[in-house]
Image (cartoon, rainbow over all chains, first blue to last red; front, side, top):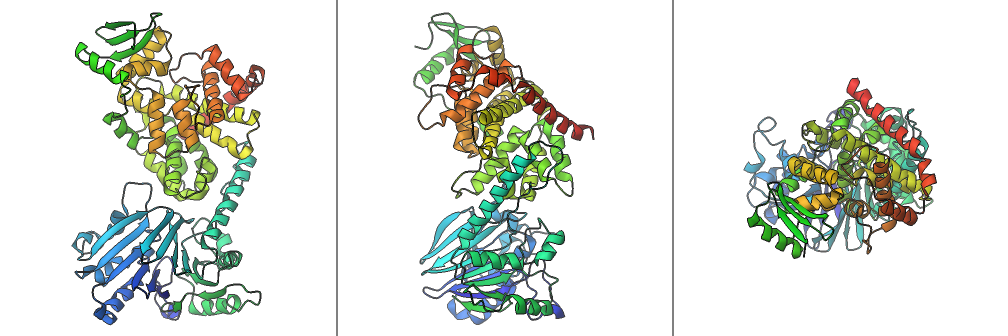
Length: 305
Length: 335
């Protein structure tokens, strides 16, 4: 598998002189399979615009674009590039679109398509020329054909959000963003109930169990792309419950799960290139104890697994 | 043979057994329908195909006593997880919907989620909060005369009472702490099947309630007479549609059926059935049931392994829990 990062930023596109090196586009990751040739795209953040242009300009000889597009969830930074994915407007393009189902009656197609309506965008989704087939996903395991297997697993985010585990010819690539470590929401006493201790105990058991279960999900991955929007001190000061992890937690979790290579992803929009370089020098040194290779994701970065 | 004597009156069709007790009763049926009904029952063909009920189940709203509090808790900028847990745990429909979401979305979990605490941590406060609000904005059950035959408030107190009792019995019988909440949820949900019957067919349901008051039949028997099926069947259907844990669907379906064995977790169902008996025996709210039969209570006590003295000791605590719940909700109503 060849992985290429077209967008690595979280929350909102953040162009400017301070993000030139690591990039300001929001989440979009391309997984390329060689034998047979298949393209999987994960998320349609603003980075997907350049991916679309690349496919049309540099790979025109291959014929119409055919790809499997996986949405981790439908928060705006993960869908904002979708209307700007040029192959949408080319007849012959085939997209199989996957994403998490939620509790309401709105389908994935409706949620993603809602930004392509009169108030937000001049072209409606129904006017796109591409052939699109939607698949609402829940937790589970399925095959994409050509020996590609996918496992979907719910993460901890303020919207139902899926992590994906792609397996092909013994190689494993996992995406675990946007997510925050499960935590005991009942740890603090409510001050009004005599059952607080029991509730807190159960809450702790549940949170520990879910964190372990998530680590099992990406255990042994050759490449793990993990949410690392914050530093631990930032997270603890005011960002609990926002649905993102920390650099420190991502590294510890990857170590516990014996991951071979960890890509820290979904950078905070305010994180400058200088800060990222400084963090790289602290966290990305080679680990003599055999821990994972650690890299901060950078726009345009290509990795072979 | 369904009955030894059949009477067709203006109200409907009644079958009496050998002791001249009402065996089956159908409201508003004509002579023309009689043979078809008899044939259906004889062939066991009575099935839940009622479109009104099925439609109602798919968009079942929350309870009026809790809806105001749901809005208050969920519209705060910083929703308290404790308050969210508490307000959901006081509403059978909302509890059922959260369980439905967690178990339908997370179908690959090795073990299904049966506790609200687990569900809230897994789904996250934001998702649960929005689910609660989406349920609350539907016309609430009990508001706008939608809870027409049973008293909404009495039904709510009964459901809560059975939940609290079931959890207490679980504790008394040595069920581990982490599993006790499941008994509360089961008690809260056990009469879910009465909600669509009462909402969709208030007049017919009144007929069933009157039959309980005037004859010696139990409510689920009277429901069978009126509808051809009872709240247990409807509750089982809801549990199935909402993909609730097997223990919950068994409780909904079999809490009046003490004979059913097979794959049913009988001990679990027995505890909730006994809690139901005591809620009725002590008049904790009312869901239209007749007073429990002594023989049934004795049988369940024996099966569960609790004696009446131990059970009597928790009565005050149960009443206190219900009063606290009422105060919690009234704070929202008044404030």
